[in-house]
Length: 403
Image (cartoon, rainbow, N blue to C red; front, side):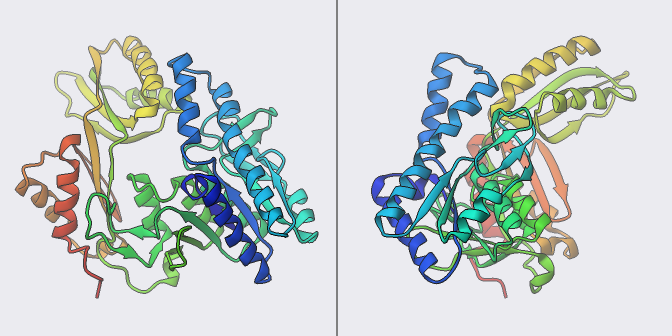
C-alpha cells in the first residue's frame, strides 16, 4: 500500500516520477494499491472558490466540490502508469467501496467493500484509489477531513492485509519538531502509535490523527517517507515492539485553534454536559477545557476549538449562553498551543516543571494547560510560539540522538 500526498503529485513531472516509483514496486513482485491526494494546492483553491461565493457553504456541497480534486489525480496517474507499459485502473472513493457515516466534511469510515479492488489485483493491475472520500449510507459523497487520504490508505491497508502502508510526502520522516522552525530538528527513525497520536493531535502535520488511530487499532505498520528520494523515513508501530523510549520524543505546536470563553455560567450539575453536548451535536471538536473556580454561584468556562469550526461554535455558544442566562461569550484567535510528547515521561517525574520553568525563563505566559500520560500542552500567545518551540527543543536536548 502506498499513499502520495498533494505535493508529491503537484505537477505532471512529479506525477510521472510517482508513476515510475509505483511501477518499480510492482516489478519487485508486489501487488500495489496506491492512494492519491489532489494535485498540489487544488483542495485549498476549491475551498477559496467556495468561500468567495458564501462565507458558510453547505457542507454537503463542499464534499461534492472537494472530492473532484482527487478524481483528476487518480485518472492522470493511471494514464502515466499505462504509458510505462503497466496496466492500471482508477477508482473514486465510492467506487472503491468506502462506506462512511453521514457527517459531511469529517466523515468516519464504517465499512470497506473492497471486492472490486481485489478482482482488479487478481488481474495483475495496479489499483489507484482517490483519497479523502467515500459514500455515506444515504448515498451522498463524503470527505474524511483534512489529511483524509492518510486514513483512506491505512484503512485499505488494514482491509486488504497489506504488509506495510507507505505514506509518501514532501518530508523524509517524522522530526523532533518542524525543521522550518528549528533547523536542528532531528528525524526520528521509529516512533510508537501512542506518541504519533499525541503528535498529530497537537499540531504535527505529517499524519492525520484519525489515520494513526486506525493504524493502531488494526496494527498497520506505517512508514512515512519522502517521495523525492530513496531514504528510509520513520516507522510508526506498536510500543511493545520497541526498545525503551526517550523521555521526550518531540515538541509540537498548533496555530490553528481559537479560544472560546463563556462568562458567568451558573455553577450547578449538568451545565458542562449541556455546553459540550451541544457542541458535539454540531460536530465541533473541543480540545482543552478550563473551568474557573466558582464565585458566588457562577463560573467562566473556556475551551479551544479548531478555527475552521469557529463559525459553528459561535452559533452553538450563542444559543447555550441564552439558554443558561450566562453573561456573554468571547473569542480569541491569537493563541497557539505548544506540546511535549514522549512515552518516557510516564516514568520520569519533573518534565512538567522543567517545561513550565523554561517558558517562564523566556517570559512566555501560560494561559491553559492540558496533560496526558505522554503529553503536556500549554496554550500561549501565538506570537511567542516559535520562541517557545525553540526554547523547549533546546531545553530537552532533542537535537541529540537519544542514548
